[in-house]
Image (cartoon, rainbow, N blue to C red; front, side, top):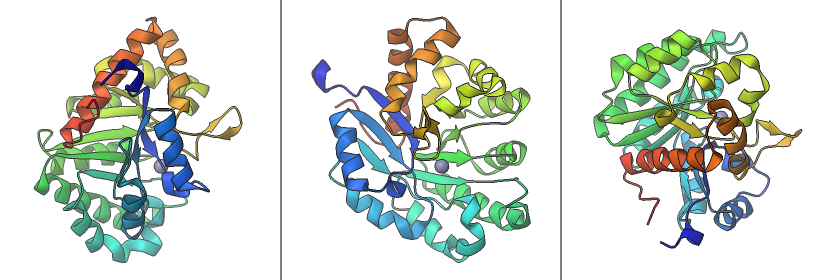
Length: 259
Ligand SMILES: [Zn+2]
């Protein structure tokens, strides 16, 4: 692969199917050479995502069941397990301990834990995980149900404590960070505590905002600037490290990004 065809950046958590024009967004990812892990929020939405991304070299669809949707979608739990057999990418799954979703917590746990068990059973799975106000329980579930040689967990937009972050690192987790995390002291402190060899980038597009507008996958190119400032390293060095981490993570799932 020549340098000009090389992937420029990586978005490890993007809701491609929530964009107003997913096929157009996928084409733009090709144009801007951004590799994307396209999360889905229900297993029923996955086939359409797979269809959109089937011919894309850059955008890869994952199957998930978002913790915020567990109330209305709990019945899709078996479908989720079945579909985890058919794809090496899983997400968005996880737990949300916020007051709005707290009443669903037991059901959320059941979905999350069964998805982890399924991913671990099949092996070579990469998972993008939501852990808002639930980091401790998410980490416990990862420890209990997965083997890091079979499942690679990426904690997306992590907002737990530094101690929780360290425990997740011990379990082999990676962290995908976005520009919104840099807008708070707490978020910046967390990013600073991630070893560079576990750092990935994301947008949570379209939810996280960049300059007041919904984020898009190629915003990850600009993300090299605040990361390099924070770590005091040249941005090309950061970008090279993240490139290496990202291709390794995709490779874990059997996806060759560099060729
Ligand atoms: Zn998300």
